[in-house]
Image (tube, rainbow, N blue to C red; front, side, top):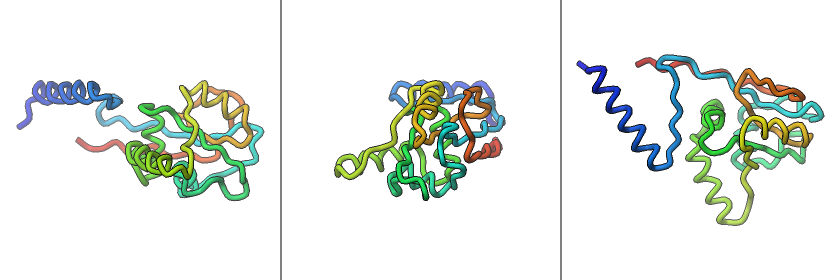
Length: 161
C-alpha cells in the first residue's frame, strides 16, 4: 500500500533533482487531459494542410520542405516548452531529447540546420505572420490573430494512475 505523503515526497524529491540537472518539469493535474496542439501558419501562407509524417520528417531534417512548398521554414518552441514536448509526443515518433540528439549529429556533420526556435507563443505567432513560408505550432486555444490552423494534434488521453 502506498502512503500518499511518501509518494508526494518522492515525486517532489525527483522533480527537484531533475530540475537541478536542467531537466524541465511540467506539472499537470493528475489525470487531467493534455491540451490540444495546433500546427499553424500565417494567413499569407500557401500551406493549407499538413500530415503528421510530413511534419515529423520536416522537423527532423528528413525532408527540407512540405510537398508543393519548396521553401517551407519550420519553427519550433524553445527547449523546455510544454508545447514542444506535446508536439513531438503528438507526432508519436520521438521525444524532444531524441530529436535534439538527432540534430546534434546532423549539425556536427554539417549537413543541415535545425528548425528556428521561438522564445514564446507571441514570438512564434510574430514569425509565422511575417514569413509566408513558415510553419509552427501552438497550444490550443490560441488567441494570436493572423494565423491559420493546418493540423490539429489531439490531446493524448490522460494516463491512468
